[in-house]
Image (cartoon, rainbow, N blue to C red; front, side, top):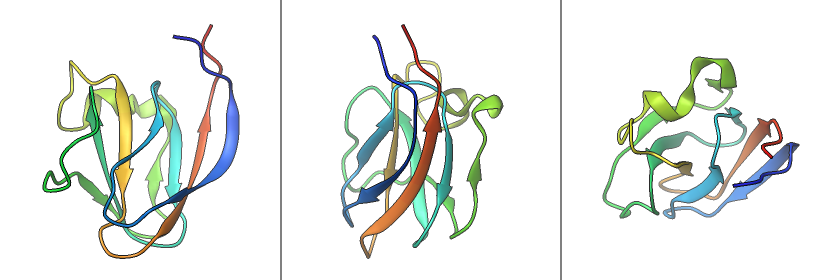
Length: 96
């Protein structure tokens, strides 16, 4: 699984889980509270993740894929904003 490195702000549609990375990454909630979960496929909207208020997030060095529900089998990091569209800053390294 090859992935390009990037530092970008991603738009997240309210009420929909959105894949932000298949590798550990740094992320920050920019405009709304978000929920984050590790999963092997897009979770159902009823699934709840770990909540992050505006201005908070995680650094890639914390091993984000291993920290969330689904740890051990997760192949992606998904985020959701429950009630309003949101923006999330995401930074990750390249994977060959």
